[in-house]
Length: 249
Image 1 (cartoon, helix red, strand yellow):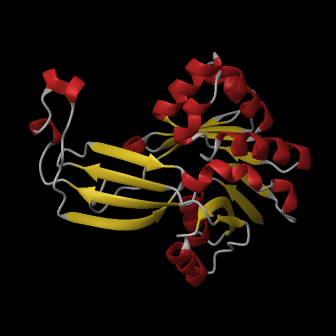
Image 2 (image 1 turned 45 degrees about the vertical axis):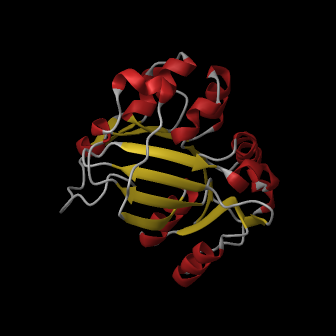
């Protein structure tokens, strides 16, 4: 089975602030906010929704093909995936742009401040699902707005079943657009917060969404996940961590 994973491939720069943000922000002065945080600990990780999903599917023995657009600075990421044997033939390099980058600062309370530069992701529409032969399963994940719409249309036209995983890209779309995604998709995956937001934006309740797809999957953090199908719901227990290292996925 060949799975085409459409979405972002990004660098995540993760910094740890050894204090609490609230100790350095004056609530009555947020209208003139000007703060700086000293972050002695920093690391750079390979991330992005398509990258993360492809990596984990590979660990499970799958054959993922991530598809996305990256910048001229993608080299270290390419070396990492090449060493793992993950197919990068559908990753397009836009030389004049940067690879998407997230800059995440976490404090001692696990609060986060994040800045995200989309870079080459905004030209994801230059890739086409229809150009990839032999795909048996697809995923439309957070990416450039036009690219996500195009990918869903092309999966549907090709008759390839796909998962709609809007994630943090959900605010890019209005209610009618989200309803169209759901009607095109075979599966929808959201977390519990996104599930509420999706229902609010579409005007469809959980039962109405479930009736339009083969499975509606909601992850619930430490409570595990639930898989709703038109026939039955399945509660999936969580995998318990040995220790918590960082709240950033």
